Image (cartoon, rainbow, N blue to C red; front, side, top):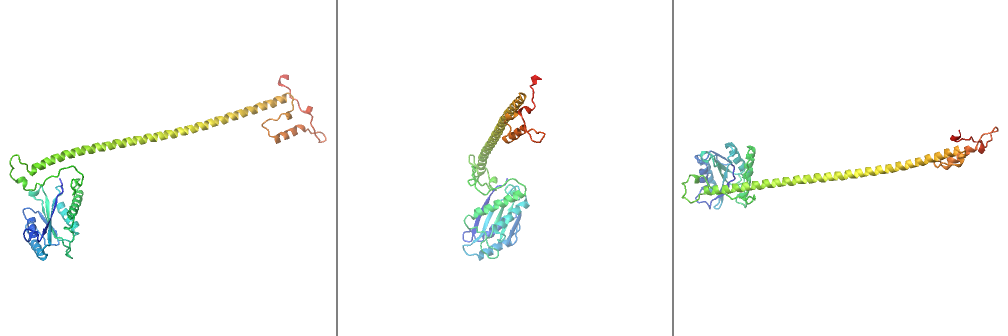
Length: 348
């Protein structure tokens, strides 16, 4: 599984244990028994087992530096097991391009052969000098430079894993920064598994790591259970919220329906009231009409009975018509006895 591991150390002219430590480090990095491939830029080409030209170049650079100069920086990074050889080489090259913007000399040896099949890693030797101006480009001696280098490698490595279609990712932050309740492991190294078995009762780094891994596995299982319970609780809360919203919406719709029904009932009551009033008026008109007919049948002059449904002007005209009767000379008059009489129905 891909892990994050990055170690950064400087090689200073006045702080190194022996002169030309950078050249010696390059010789160690490129030894034929460990390095499967050598890559680099802006310095003599290196090959596994053949780094003499590059060593001479580093010795010349050290001789040209001031006494307290920083000759080079050494970086060791763990390579993901999930990446093949070509992807690992590309990741290391991309890392250096981003770190130095393609303007600093560097050399790297990948140790991913049979001896390191379970521990693939890369050694990088970087001279932080611009190839044109000779000024520092990366600033590896600056404060928080290590965190910057770690973040760049994590980003490049995760991009390579994503391109390869691998779901696993690495993180350069500590467990504390990631708010993880996990116990940090101890470094084992490649030589420790081949060392003789220690005396009984004495724990080695491997046994300590096994206990740490077991404890971390239990912690991760508990965390997964907590997350599952938390997600379940969130799901239940969301379901209850949805149900509450649906119930409120239904109650609102029911209230609106009640308002509409009440308005319809009010309209219906008003219509019934108006219809009842019209029926009463019609009954009154029928009663008056019957009275008028009754008056005519009893030979009472209709002119003396004014129906309520006639206005005054119409009634005056009607009375004038009743009074007028044409004569032979054209003048007219009407007498009460001249009107035709209507016999009662029972007299016929």
